[in-house]
Image (cartoon, rainbow, N blue to C red; front, side, top):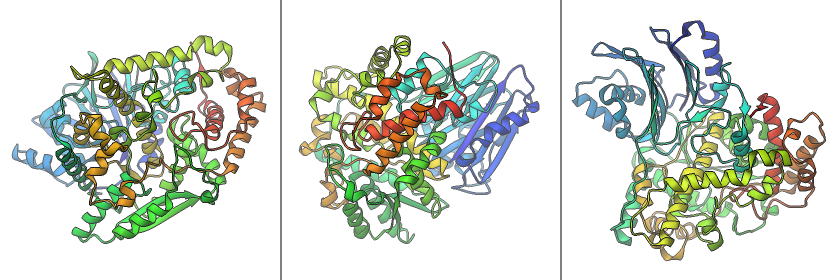
Length: 617
């Protein structure tokens, strides 16, 4: 994985902007600690910066990468990993291309030279990339189908800028950290989720998953090249399970290619156990030695654990079971409350936005420790969104909620804003607008009954909003630690197939993710196969609640806090003084209870200070 950034300006000589381009690129050093590269177009109107994390072909994958073909010059910067590199390479060789390396970077550039915009249809992987065509004076940008890799952009007059992270754009004087009404609503009411395509800062955007963008002197054109297609599902339960099994196993095997150490994250749940089981078998077949696995826990967490609907069981016994069954070398990494609190600051800067509090900081610490021994990990994100693993797929009151089911506290969160801000932002109206806009995008299936149509809406909401929030978290926290995280469930072939599986099969046996459980029979031990879903582990230590409450109260007592511009101090203080513990009803998703929201609000203060954020209409 890498960090990419670029700058086009039709009226400026960008060879005179070395210092600014370097500043933009070096904000991405954690994404690519191994190499740094720059390139300026002969026309002087385009420039790229690149930071590299070496995973495949250390010598042959350097970037920016330039090639000439038929008298035309092309230059590429790329962040990602292609899992079908050799398939594409063979096809390109048959078409007359030759290669100097075995890197996927060179294959991607040749694919663009051969097929131009249509090259994206050939790619199986996670990616964000840009190609400059010097003769056409044109740049092409593309992002993977499901948005695993980020790509932000901003247009300022005759200039167009793009980058892997917001911090790189903000390093250019043309882009200011300004929050308008929309940005405030994104942070205070929708956060830590984010409207697809929204960059939070004023007039900053994210290229949406499955889209590509072309910019020339004539302007900017954005097109969607991939989207889910709704069609009748004809397979019976046995064929459906077999197809899910084949597609998932193929995705996992493809993602085990690496020239550096590779491991899996293991929580003891269904998804991570499936990945570990398949990966361990591949390691054994290929003589690669024992697979290393990693899990996270917290000091004395077992003594503080409280069973709830959202976290029904402890993970540790199931982690041991899977590791022993598949002969992995397992590492349990434990963190204490002071570390979690301290890392909240790092997690904020990694994300450039207020995030999921200790759910973020713990993942960063986890990745940082793993990076000491390996460079690539496989992780189980996306299965719950695909197969219906969350409580809101199963509870009637959440299924029928006329809003985002993971964000049921909009009114309460809106109440933390000052009356003036509530009148300006209109929080509930803003959330309703974003919700309805998303429903308008749902690919409908003609003739579907109302309940099935509603479930399709719910799956679409989860795949375009909630899943992207978790992918965003995984990318930022892992790349902050210079660790590449791959997500085998996020394979577009598997996603498209599962999209059309009807609920009675997805929920086979009246169990959440029932069809996935059936698909994994004989692969995952029964104790895990039928274990009730448990989410990513968080701390249950009351010391964390005390620490985050104290942080928020200190912010409220500081008269210089920029947070005072937007909140109702009396209401927020009353919330901070509440006795809510780490368990209980969450304010966002399954994990963000009161302690996490204390940290979320306090982190907005830190964010506004450190990023010098201003508010403007």
